[in-house]
Amino acid sequence: MSEPSTAAETVPARTDFIRNIVREDLASGKHGHINTRFPPEPNGYLHLGHSKSICLNFGIAAEFGGHCNLRFDDTNPEKEDVEYVEAIKADVRWLGFEWHELRHASDYFEVIYLAAEQLIRDGKAFVCDLSAEEVRQYRGSLTEPGRESPFRNRSVEENLDLFRRMRAGEFADGARTLRAKIDMASGNINLRDPALYRIKKVSHQATGDAWPIYPMYDYAHALSDAIEGITHSLCTLEFEDHRPLYDWAVDHVRLHERPELLKPLTDAGVPNEAAKPRQIEFSRLNINYTVMSKRKLLALVNEQLVAGWDDPRMPTLQGIRRRGVPPEALHLLAERVGISKQNSTIDFSVFEGCIRDVLDAKAERRMAVIDPIKVTITNLPEGHRETLRFANHPKDESKGQRDVPFSNALWIEREDFMETPVKGFHRLVPGGEVRLRGAGILKCDEVIKDGDAIIELRCTLDPESRPGMEGANRKVKGTIHWVCATAGIKAEVRLYDRLFSVENPDDDADGKTYRDHLNPDSVRVVTGVVEPAAAALTNESAVQFERLGYFAAERYDHAPAKPVFNRTVTLRDSWAAKGA
Image 1: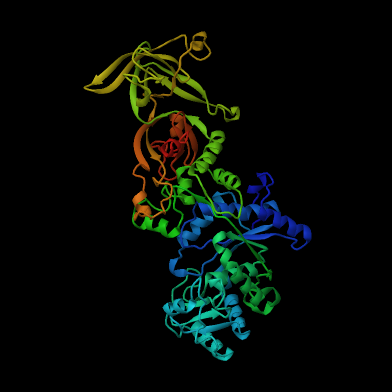
Image 2: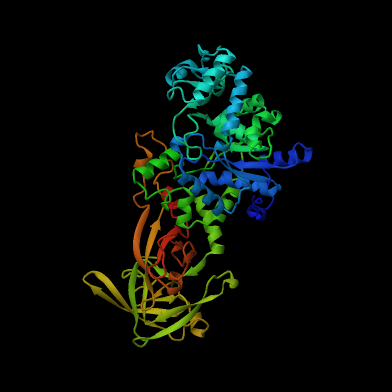
């Protein structure tokens, strides 16, 4: 059994309405120990929105000395897969958290079933023969009450008999449901005799073919929380209208008062931790320029509009990890967005700002050229070789220094030279000077062309302008980076950008769908050149390529002999001007 994670303990104490409730519950003695859970459905990969819930549930448990379980709400085997389970576990650990216990709703199927039989005996549930379409017709609308099912007043004995026969697999899929007997006139449609169980003869990833019936999510979720002794069941605002049903299930089953219902677990050695949980809703994380519907993300994958769930353009945690986003950036995002009851959409630049703030402090610096043009320094002898010393991080001496090869043949960025300069261009021009990062002042003497294409610049380096020399103090406006042409290593550089080109890809008012708003420039692959110390970085290492942006050594494809880098984020927000 794992101890609660300490990942969130470095975060300063925060105040929000949920943490205030937790503090009050501890101070009043209502709870002596805080238990939370993160309860994903294993029917897809986790995305950015889930990171807020993970940080909240695990963070609160850590802050208040409690426990947080990871529980898979696996009640819909048709859409679930072990692949998703393993990815979710990896995501939680990547974010820096370790669960107290790993649980599954399927661990509790026997208890949930016995609870349903108890509801039948108490006259609170009945077996209904209406088809799904008929149930919809009987349900009513927001302005009209529903009508009671003609099967609502079956006797307890008949309901128990039918329910047990459902359990035995006697009836076809969809032939019957077990429904709660609540109130067909309720203003909350969720309380209009909702289904508790449906017949679904589908093999389950954990229980195999043991169950031809499965509990509905709302019912199973409430009882799973109660079984685990969850004190604060934290979920997003779309579950606010479901809270009365959650409370109904907890209050009418009363697992905390009925140890006989828990016997399948206690007989197996699981301690009785049953308690009465409280559901509290908070606003979900919405970010523009993204879609975070699992259905739509699955469609992007299945239709091969992206390269998989972990495509670095995807808002999945696997995708943004592969892109090079550090987990600390998601902690920072959760802190900056905060916890509230008001739904809102934050700008993608807020997320990118968190990435930059973390990587500015964390990422070592290297030099790379992604659109090379050759520079020959004519006043250095042919075959000149030397080694320069560069700091790995300009603001952190503890990161040390590295050797950078230098020769008379270099690569610079094509955009750092302009044959006919425009006003305000302060980089290399014919006859002009520029500071060559860490090497001195460079003057362009000659431009070599092949037709209209510039293929080489011939330059001279002022020998008295090396860093530390008096000549280095000479005023020169521009500074450019470079890579040694003899020692530099070719690298594949994947320039990622936002997946969608509009703020709200979900808006289909103009007849277009999110598929129509895919950004055609969301990835561009180029061949660049990097200094040897960049090629030597290990997979997933974060780096700032000076003047180009923050990059990461590709999680799977990078190798020192054949380096591959993903652009994580640009140095500055390049989208602000587009939206202006």
